[in-house]
Length: 360
Image (tube, rainbow, N blue to C red; front, side):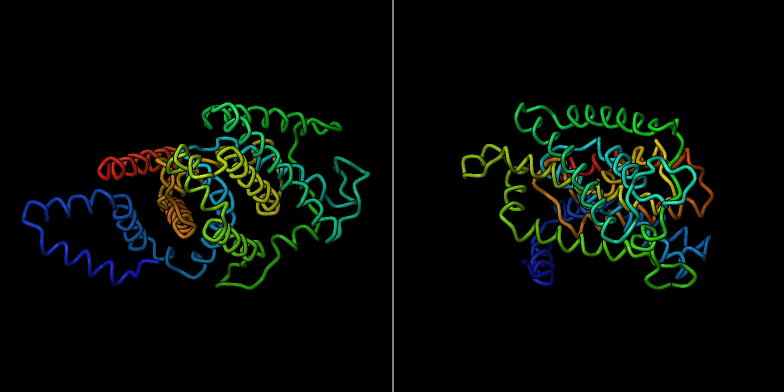
């Protein structure tokens, strides 16, 4: 691992050897490459100055809970981006698995229970349901990876197709047993306590259990990305698939497994989403992949491929949630949030491509 202090000293030494023109180029490149971070820092400082509540302990606690909820999907989709792809089906997979988990874990005495013969909710049954929805997500991810790897189809087309298929399944599912598309609610206390139960409080805000689960996922994903042959192969394929193949990397299975792992993460996201929102509707998960993609790009996961880190993804999710929390406190309406979100993705991708072209 590169010593940060040594890197700073090296940059300082290189800077001293530059002439005036190169120094100017150095500062221009530095500002442009980090323009998004600079603008976000200015925005955060502005928000804190006009809304002091933005810096309170309660606001920070709310931020942590949001990051923990959105982080798993970002951790999954990041692998697809490392392979120079994307995944448009992430949000719908999360919505489908959220609906399945909610139906399986409704209270036994709930009047509008969709399936009356579901077993009594216990910790063991909750874990079975968790494994089930993760398996559903992993299976859809496997389908995505198979079509991308086997037929060399662009991930955009493949995941757009599975997004539509999954949404159709969601609509069908919500119409079962006379539910007629109504939101699924009445979640059991055991389910709520295991996923969203209070661990401790920061200020007046309770920190739910899924924050701990998110931290565990971060450790697991960091290990997979940095300490396993699979992680090394993923970056090799993302950097240059042909070179990786020549080096002995199984490009087909690496691609399939990356998408399968991503699907499993979406399944987990759906599992906690029902508890986080209190109920599950057919629209649950809509456009959630946009937030995940934006967070990854902000965090340095490049669409050029072969570049990204778990710490960068965490930073990206934090920055994106800070922006949305700040915009909400400033009274920005929900319609404008979509405009801002799209602009962030566009600017982040443009700056990322600029870095790539400069290096090239």
